[in-house]
Image 1: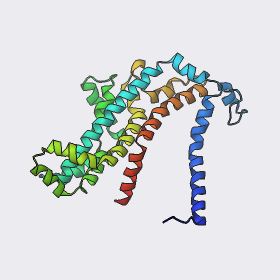
Image 2 (image 1 turned 180 degrees about the horizontal axis):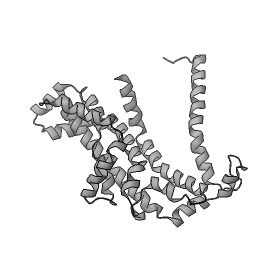
Image 3 (image 1 turned 90 degrees about the vertical axis):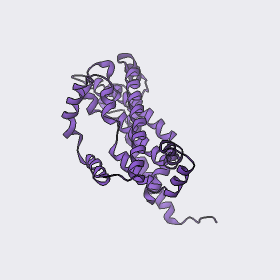
Image 4 (image 1 turned 45 degrees about the vertical axis):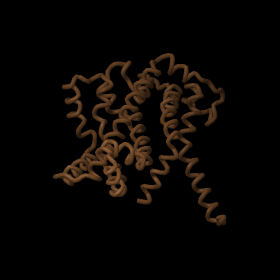
Length: 274
């Protein structure tokens, strides 16, 4: 049966369109500013649309800095962290959701408690441990502290608890091992949750600024968030170059979101239903 649109539907669509336009305005300003010259941005007389569009900012990004190397560093660390987080979160969530062991509730409470501790509190101990392991100024210093996510464990546990126990018992009777059961039965059922968690994890890792700034010293080991500071001069900020670098930084995140958009929206919908 066709749904009849009421006048309120048009009002809601209009309000959502206006809200979306407001949220996209800063990004549109950033993209258009990357096509301007630095003097045009500083003078502020050209308006939103560049008077003479130019790719000078993008050329400077690739000419004056190893930006491709920084992109690769961010990509490899973000992918490793995302894959490891999805694996550890789903496996740990499965254990907490479907297995019983002594001290289960206490351990889970301690894991949740780590979500309440700001990173600034554990920043110095984490750095000292990283230094003892000899990983300072190494990309593994970014990867190692982020292999496990307490939020991911919590999210996976909540989803896996909804899987009927009878389904798992039937798979065990058919001879499935625990790891095979996790891989063939549980993982397909929690795929929407894994997609949403993967997008959040990738975005957080890609945009991580403070920790790489602390542990990375060499220019060749930098990640893309540090590029925004690299292109700021001592006496003058090259706004068009900074905007160009910012546009390039956001492109991989947008691509990841577009690839997993369907599963991401489904995961958020299921979260609301739960």
